[in-house]
Length: 214
Image (cartoon, rainbow, N blue to C red; front, side, top):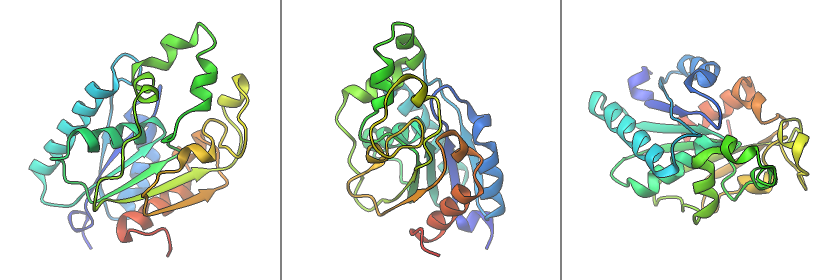
C-alpha cells in the first residue's frame, strides 16, 4: 500500500519543543507507509487559539495538496492543541488521532510549577489557556487513541509531587479522554516517548486500523 493510500500524518510537538523533536517518530511512520508532515508552533509566546488556527491552516494546506486521509498525532501539549483545533475548526476533516502523553484532563505539574514566579513566563500562553478552558469533547465519528506512559522519570518530578502513576511529567489519570476509541499504557517516560520504537509501533498500528491491537 502506498503512502497516499495509508494517509497523511501531521505530527504536533509539545511544550518548549519544535518540529525537529518529532523527527524520530516521523521516520518510523514513514517506514510504516505514511506520508508525514511535522507542524511547528510557538508554544510559549502564542496562545492556544492562535496556535489552533495555525494548525488548522496547516491541515487545510495538506488537504488541498492531497486526496489522502488526514491523521493527527500529538505529543504532550501537541495533543491539547489538536483537540482544541478539532473543536474550533470542525471544517477540518480528520480520520484518526493519536495522543501521546497528553495532559487532556489537566496538569498537576503545570499547576505545581505555577507557584514558582520564574515559571509563569516559561510555561507560556498555550498551556495557560488550556488550563482555564473546558475540556474539548471527542468529535463524533473521530477514531482517537491514547498512549500513556507509566515510567516516572522526568522534569515534573524535580519540582512538584505527582500523586499516582505518571510518566515523570503527566499523571496517568490526566491522559484519560472520555469517548476515546482505545487507550494503552507503556512503561516509558514522557520525553522518551518521542524516540520510542514501541510508541511508534503503537501509533502506526492505530493509524492503520483504528485499534492498538495487532
